[in-house]
Image (tube, rainbow, N blue to C red):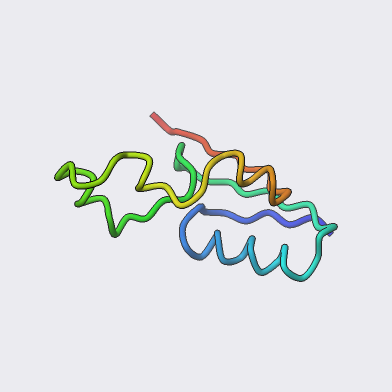
Length: 78
């Protein structure tokens, strides 16, 4: 099975997680216009106010996608 998930937000992350929990063999490709891995927009204010380091905003790293067998295509449109 091959699956393409559009979007790296909560819904996209949940879809990838649900697919992977049901089958280890699925080829999952995640496509996002975000150039950064999965992060929490809810805590951006803490980062902006310097209460939180930049690394604390991210809930996943690029290595995490690889460990989960997800081909993450994170594209920045500038």
